[in-house]
Length: 292
Image 1 (cartoon, one colour):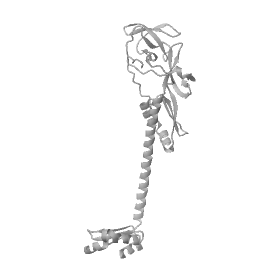
Image 2 (cartoon, helix red, strand yellow):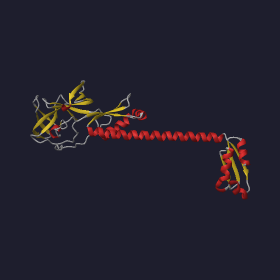
Image 3 (tube, rainbow, N blue to C red):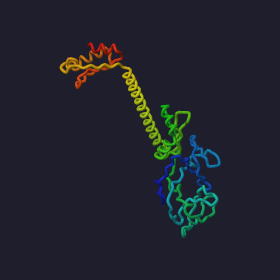
Image 4 (cartoon, helix red, strand yellow):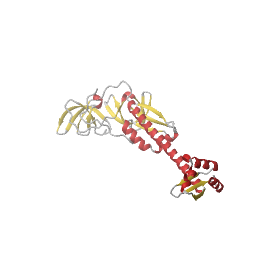
């Protein structure tokens, strides 16, 4: 386990940001920020601002975590941004600290020393990070088997990227516009978390699609029923209260039998009338049900 920084090591949310890594120069002992664009076996494709280049994985690390201001100690190792090379960090040894100013002696091939102040120095990230025996980042491709999910991901890419990247800490998340797949770049654990989040989003889309389909089917069924009832024939007639039991039959058997035999949609007995209401597809059918 590496020692902790003398500062906050929490990573910022990287949703919608370019995936930032740092490329190591072993001679100059420097770290140049770049964008990780692709991975091919043990090589990383890095955009260093002046074009893309393939770099061996051993020369690439994740960008150092941000930190709050701290006071370096004499003889300690820090990383410093040189004047004129503001984007690059160089390893240096602290010669002295006085009044907020630090005298740093550069350890790489360029040598020299500078007087620097915060925020132009930070802890030496590589000196405290654990040694690596395998590539820190991998490329994984997640296949989307449902075309509806793929279309939803494309339409909502910004929102999905923001959610997945911030929660999983993958370095890159790309929805392929043509093929039903998503490309992930990042640590293996981060990619595994991202896949789980993608599956959850996919399940949510599937559930939404199913509910929408069921709602449409129900709506179509209700519309068909309304149209059928609107076009139906209706007949109402009174009935003596003493005859209600005879009209209905035991357990509604007479009503059901008349409805089935005449082919009507509904036969109802309203005890408050009392009256009988018959609804059917034709005048003949409701008259036939009345006779039954």
